[in-house]
Length: 567
Image (cartoon, rainbow, N blue to C red; front, side, top):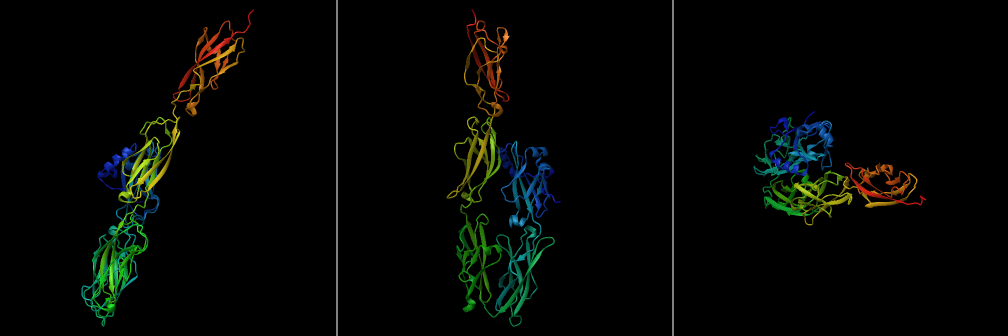
């Protein structure tokens, strides 16, 4: 099993940490409770599912218990999850087949990034996996063979552009060189264009003689730099024509044009022009696009007769910002000239900001102080320039605000003291708007529950309760009911009624009255005699079930009414 290796920086255990990331780490610490770093692994493409990429826990210095308690998980905005985290072992594994060519195309180095989130406290660790190339593609030609019609009067040094091979691999595994089969008339010369693509020309070094050799069969081989190398080939058939001694000549060696992305099919780009000094059919010029990149033929086309270049497919600035076309002009004798066309793509605001929720905490306790972090979001816009600049705000008057200490990352924090008894749930909207013209925006709705704390004592409906009872009453008779309310909820609002200790005439008050602990009903425990006791004053405490509990006392006056029971 191959293992992903963190890029070496001289630190023990191969831990990765670039100096330029120190500021990035500082900003991440401002967003989360604790941020320990950014690690990077390098693995080859096409690893088997379940292959080990790296020991995340070891490389970040995290305990496996912390991974489990923090509910460690991977967060990525990509539709395909190439990796998975084994929390019980703290290792990162390959989840899906990774094809470097499918993932990055010609872009190098090729990598993808994601974040590992831990809760309680919130931690954010960025992980980058670089995919290195293996030599799993051979150079290939778009066509099976090439045909040239070359006049026998062609001069030594005449150039003939050859088909270009494409190798999906990059770096040393990419295209290295072209080889031409041995012959007496042509040599091969190799070039590289502005983006590093190699192409070759066949140069005439000995005049052709139609009467001796009316045709030639050659072979062009493309070889990559892999070990062992891979190769591909194309047959070249040369038909020798009678004299045509003037080649077409472009009036410009370089054309420049610009178009906006999302232009409709057949949008005009520019016009190229080449002239031929020959007469008649030998002076008729046709135009075609070189096959330096097979993909360009799907995006642009040139009119063979007029040289007008038009769009042939959708143009997306977010994929390619500039194109280089190689345009060839060919006369009827097979002589050619070439010119380059540089096409700049102008960005338009066609992508709305994307809001990704990386972490959100609900419910939040009502006693949380202002500035408490409740969420972490990422906002990205694929456009460039002002079209990709994003501002973020919260709609309405919710007691929250957005704070950003790092590009594309925002924290949601409380902006004032919360009171569950006033508002127990908040529904607020985060709006991300770019600076395009017209601007595009995206909304995301959040629901936040406010959890209760025991911050309210029970409250009696009266400050003093009074009740009358006739003397000679029966023991156990109900005298009155005490009522208290608590605005808290659940256990914090569960009220118990307790008779406060006090002596009356040398006896405990509980010998005279009792209070039901749940209902607050006051009962007489004995029969009263007006001639002995005319009034009872005692206190009752209402206490909630919070921790610690809160309570309130109330005074109860029990007035004994006289009966005519004495002669």
